Image (cartoon, rainbow over all chains, first blue to last red; front, side, top):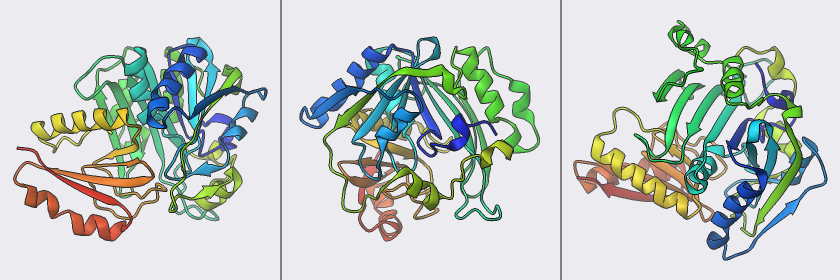
Length: 246
Length: 94
């Protein structure tokens, strides 16, 4: 399975959001959304560390609140979005909103290897490969343009293809007998390349990165952990995904 | 978070409006018709609330029913047993 940086920074990089917008307007859109929510207590800081070291600025990872969000220049005029959420970036919520607010195209991807029941991995993870494309306008459901997904829902593998089919899709694969074979990370990579995004190539990110901080409190029930602690907690073994299918 | 095909049209319209309204206020980690997870995104049940999200440091669960508000309330015991610190909102969507 293809992942960004062989999951060295998973779960933060298991989901990634993208806006087809320059870095500075993307920061302004994000900070402008956050400011009224947290009574103005929002700051943006350009980081000296390049990619992927800038991802360290998101630590510690938190549950129930999202005080740190990171925007990074990406290929093809896109800006990548990551946040400090405990179990990985919540790209969909942010990107679907900002695509509308900023009037641009948005993308949220999700790549998680299936490791449930794998020897030596506890707890395992349910696998997923998801491609969700957003536009600035209302569609059949919110501003979703296209969703293609093969994901394990905890009980079984489920394939979904909703919205308007895109010219670059490999639709013949959607008829594969095994559900998880209908959409894999290589296909996802090719779909993104068709949109000028080289999602699995670290060189396609940076050099500029801006950290947006919001003064929000982590709730009493919310966990706070370092990336290494989260990886142990979730059973993430960097490098393992390289030899797994999906 | 695209809704299940089993969700009827009035509920889908209501759901879209509800999500758009909640996004504006900074809600995140939306799940639509997916297994229940708590504020740390840990699965706490195999039941599937119509809508769940995190807002202001709390996990919220909502059920939309087209029959009656009582039908929506009927989901509360299971949901709250799974996550006692969560919040539940029932909706009647005629």
